[in-house]
Image (cartoon, rainbow, N blue to C red; front, side, top):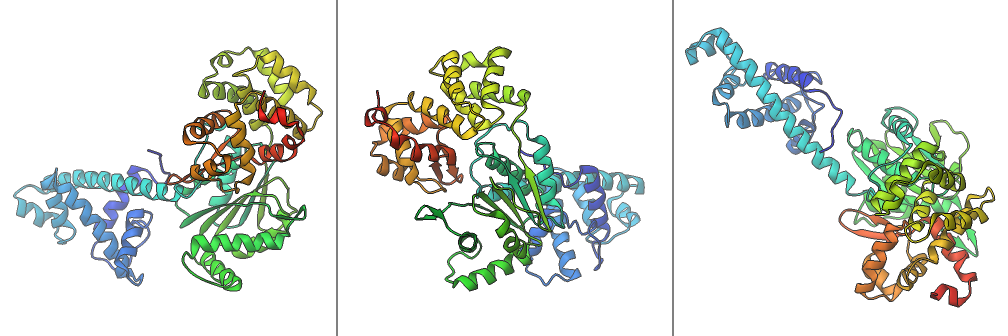
Amino acid sequence: MATFSFFNLEQLTQNVHAALKAWHGISGNPENLLESLRLVQARRLALAGNGSPSHKRWATNEILLDGIDALEGHDQTGAQVLRLRFPENNKIMAVAHQLNVSEHTVSRLQKAAIDHLTAIIYDQEITLREQQAQELEAHLPPGEYTHLFGVNEAQTNLAAQLLETQAPWVVALVGIGGIGKTALANAVTRQVIREFVFDKVVWLRTEPQMINGRFLSSEHTYTTIIAELAQHLLPQTSLSPQQRLVQVRQILKERPHLIIIDNLETDAAHLFAHLSDLANPSKFLLTSRTRPTELAGTFKFSLDELSYADAADLIRCQARETGIHTLENATGNDITAIYNLTGGNPLALKLVVSLLDVLPLPYVLTALSKGQSGDIEALYKYIYRQAWQTITPEMRALLQAMPLVAESGATPDYLQQISGLPPEQLWPAIQELRRRSLLEVRGTIQEKRYGIHRLTETFLRTEIIRWPEAETAGD
């Protein structure tokens, strides 16, 4: 179970004691109302009050009573002391007289009972937070990676910008293709979710739309974003485009939401002004290859290639997870040779590792060196071509169909339909392509969908169609 950074047990014990002492008070402060607890926040909503001081105190007292009820199951005397002292508002002397014990004993029993009550409330709070976090995370793409390399500082920086209660309202994560922007954005979002500063999290993955070979305008992209946000925030509501914009803006202005827009390929700078108008207290996290111009209330972070040390760790980890055991113990010279050819681009490194499952390292290095021209796109072309020559006809059939799939991915049923593969051939192809980093898992925990990286799609659209039919059909 993940941890949450809301406060420590000692501080909570002090706040619980303060809340008990304020039981019959109307006014209160965040500490003695236990306002930082998700338990209390949820109870306030359930009680559907008007937010008055008495309503707030009522919600807090109910949480305390629930905890005392739970305490009674294993410390009946302690629960009795707390009820006599606080809900019934008896002095220590009166409680001592009723229980026929000394005042010192009552004080000792009370302290132990408060400690136990705090532990109960703490456990309930952790359970609720985990449940709520998982509910929010269920709307994110699956976290495909067990570990991210070389991005600890970047993740900390981005999370801090998103958790800041003031500007920046729009945060852009910028980098070349295959550098790991989506994976980092996913990890940052999961970290931020567990701070519970956003009521809802929405993940949008944009799909560049073209007419006659030209990308549609940023205005069209913005209209599409608003329409998709309306589907998430205003489900089952039929609205005109202008009504959608007004209501989406109202929702984002009333309560803090975190909106992630992944894979933004159009002019991000033009969209910043529109998105900034929707923000505050809500925030936007964008991933893009294009670095937007400076604009007030925004923050840009450039994701660089991995260092040699991080690249070496990634190579060995990828080899271990994909079962390429010979590479786990690769020499420093082997790793250096791979790094010098691919740089610190994570996707390129993973694709090269997958090639080494079937091809010897000298062959791969020689082939890649032919594509080394300082252009990462040219390097990818060579990597993909080598990968293509090592996969089965079934895997090729599935990959060739993938450009027909939307950015959000496709279900297995749809993949079977467009590839023509029966289930007994489709699933092995999916699993092997995923292992080779040629297929990505998308969707949510409830519905897995499958897609390809934009660079993979570019290769399929621009390179395979140029090859002789015999080469694309298989050896």
